Image (cartoon, rainbow, N blue to C red; front, side, top):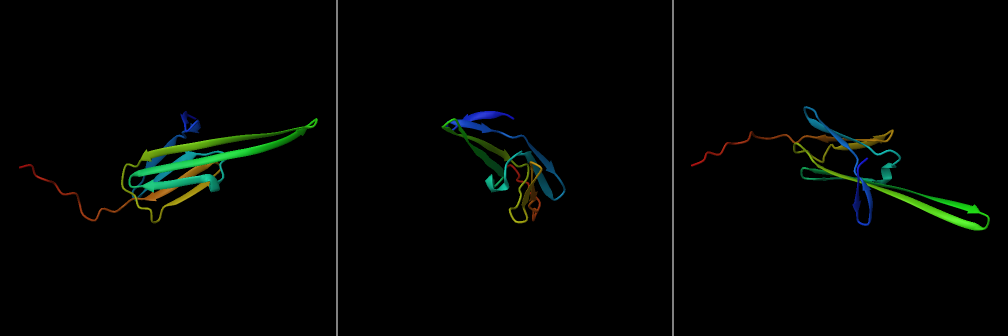
Length: 118
């Protein structure tokens, strides 16, 4: 998984698949080992942002020494969507480490109008 330095640490950039269907977009990405409580999805106009974090702490006691180790991982990805979508009716679920986001397309109320050049 690609990684970039950001804010003094490493941020993983997961691959994203976007599938366009007749009335919705399906967005999928792999976030193995991430609990849904640590995933944040934001929709800003035609931009979809997915961020997640995971962490674990391990404490071990050996011969009078106590060692506590922490490991944290951050994931972030932002993509422009190919069409306008609406927040209402959007869903997200994570199953077996695969995050699937369903975004209903906006319905165009009237066709685009051509502007003539004078």
